[in-house]
Amino acid sequence: MADNFSTLVVNDLDSFSFIGGTEQSLSFTIVDSAGSSVDLRTATCTVIFSPYGQNNYAAMTITGSVVDATPNTFTATLTGSSTQTLSGKYTMQPCVVDITGKEYRPAQGIVLITGRNATV
Image 1: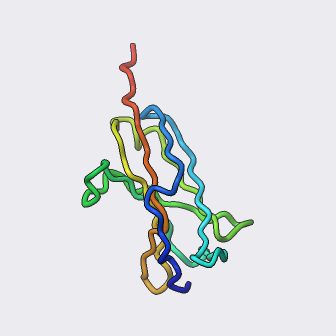
Image 2: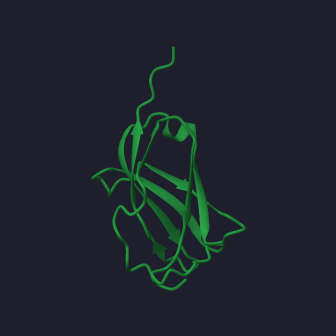
Image 3: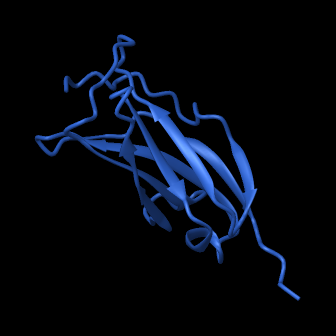
């Protein structure tokens, strides 16, 4: 994987919101700065969530899976149990670590998690 992630635009992922405790499926298609597909089959892919303004703290890290049919795409699922107790505004960064150990965070977005109401 070439070092072609020099054109990051902060908060370039679509913002989204959901109620904590619900399952969410996220999909990321990774391309380099020239727009070429990046093969992720030998990479480790995660999505890191930090409370907004606290980028030195990871509240949650979700492991992704590469989509066989499109090796430059990975998906990550937020389970209901992983977000059950979360609420607030978070930054989300997909993270790709290539086979040599080099880390890339090619994008960032904002996620709003609304607290789950109590169950009767």
